[in-house]
Length: 284
Image (cartoon, rainbow, N blue to C red; front, top):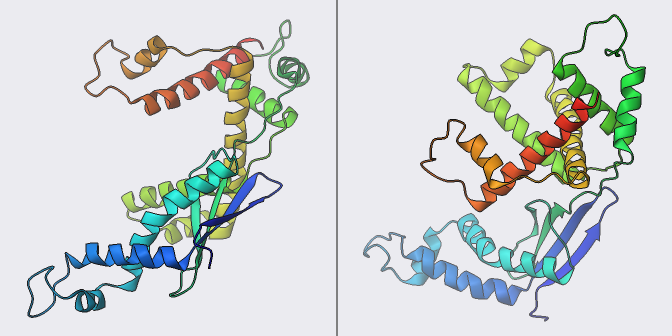
């Protein structure tokens, strides 16, 4: 039997990447032995002090699911990272794992689902936005019409960018955003003392209709973010420490807990996209 971890990579048209990992049974057994020893320390068996019972007796008290989860926590990260490195994959999203087969006495198979950063083509976005402004019902200089609000201008820019740019969003990205929105909905309804079912009944929507609606919204939102990030890069927009400090400390106060480098990078991305949108809006 081959004692090495194996990985089979499948790329889908939308950019989704599936990595089927095979963990040899010999490796599973080795790690299982370590896991049982660790878990047995907290097991209580009649007639023995906590953690002092014979291993065979302690094992009977440990749920199989707990053992499987602990084994996976030990073998999956290294197997996944190795597959990613060997196949030159640059994940844009944390993987979602699906268990294919984790039965006893067989090689384990687990599928990791992720994606790389979608490719974005924005074209001549300045020309497209200007053309959209001329043909829209928005205010045009020299005409007797009320000037549109900032929100209307932003909507025009975003709608134009979505229509004229090319980008395909991988399903895992949309699914993650939909799950996030559903989680937020559950929190909101609970605060109101309602169930999701009661909320949906009041809106006349089914769960499937709500998910379909969220998918469309998620697709547009993610595309907008990626497109604006691409434009920010093309426009040479740079976000410095001073820009970040203005957001974190609007009143000039010193933050009690400064942001981490990862948090700073997230803020930089958000501010860069905002700056790109503001620049396009200012031109119409």
